Image (cartoon, rainbow, N blue to C red; front, side):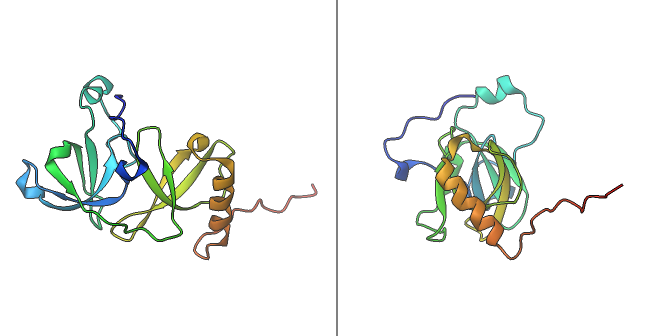
Length: 165
């Protein structure tokens, strides 16, 4: 996988889940999407690594309010909408691929090295992805874990009562 072009400030980094307008060569797909790195949970699982490595900074676009995807999209084929669409309490974490994810919380469980994170998107959804904790410092991870446990829509997993047999 190629390394993204270096950017000088975090404000210049792409935000995963940002709204974009696709206007590329596939005219039947023109419209609003969410912007994700090419190597994301929404990319097709069967990739030819050699082919994908040569694609440079292509993206995966996820349908606004749907799970329809466009893959290997050139940056010139879409326009990112500007402005802050995430809540003020979202925690921005920069990935190794140079994207910022606006995190809400983690789901209960996981390990010190990995969690399921929940992040905000411009269409108002909270989406989930498996996340290696190496790019999140322990203090931030603790905050995300506490938020996850406090969510009324999340359930913690408990071990069943032990039998005395």
